[in-house]
Amino acid sequence: MAQKQKQLRATIDENVVDGIYVNMANIMHSPSEFIIDFGRLVPGKAEAKILSRIISSPTHAKYLLKALEGNISAYEKTYGTIKTNEEEQRKLGF
Image (cartoon, rainbow, N blue to C red; front, side):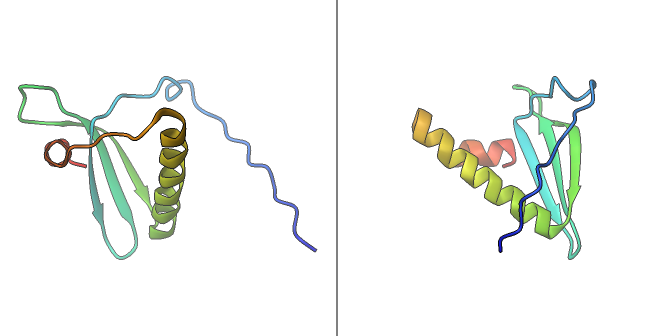
């Protein structure tokens, strides 16, 4: 008999609900964790401001990768292929 899947209920703090815009990320890892810094680059400035840091286990980092792949696939089915530029990708830190 299959186990009944539990429903996850998530809440969001008022200071987080509006989100922040980022256009760069830097990813580092050790044997026990992944660290992802999210930041914003402003045109004409040589420095990015880091706005958020996420620290995760390797297992959860892989779950995040799979969730992003699934969501990007669904997005592209609805809106078309997302165009990328390798040079721009390097400049933005992704």
